[in-house]
Length: 204
Image (cartoon, rainbow, N blue to C red; front, top):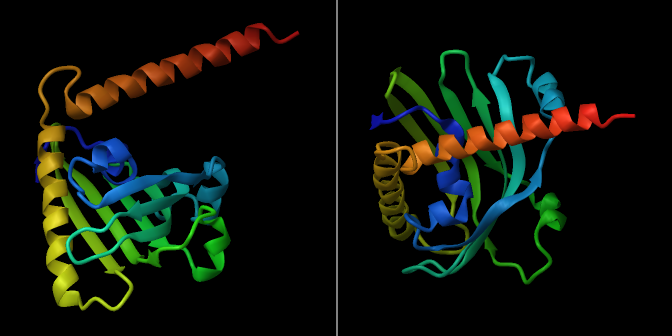
């Protein structure tokens, strides 16, 4: 359980935002949304109109890690999304793209491919200012390193993520942690609304 508002997109930023992820993942070198999918209405049609929640973010992300302890650099190409539900809960999910999608990778020498067969983080509000988190990760690190070496490294990295999340979501003050994120999102929404109004007024 964590203290703070249940904000799925903010939690997803721990994985997809380089500045945030660098604070808990010592191996991260590069991470970003390489191919954002803008037509969320079409995505929701494919997903069955709310059967799996409302998809409010979808895209293909790229991740590259540097050598850390016994593991050399890896790369991933992952389809990721955020599903929101009426009760305020959400699921942040991802699954690795297939090898025949390799042409979508950056044009550079290839690294060993790690593959997240399933990644999901479920956030469920338990009060106005607390929420539970369920984290699931099924990953093949790739290469010939035995799992008894890589598993402890992964576990410690995930623990660091949740320690970072605890401080981020319980931040105090309007510009602290998640509250700063919420304030910024409100500013962006207001700016977008004003730009649309100006566009309508300027239409000949």
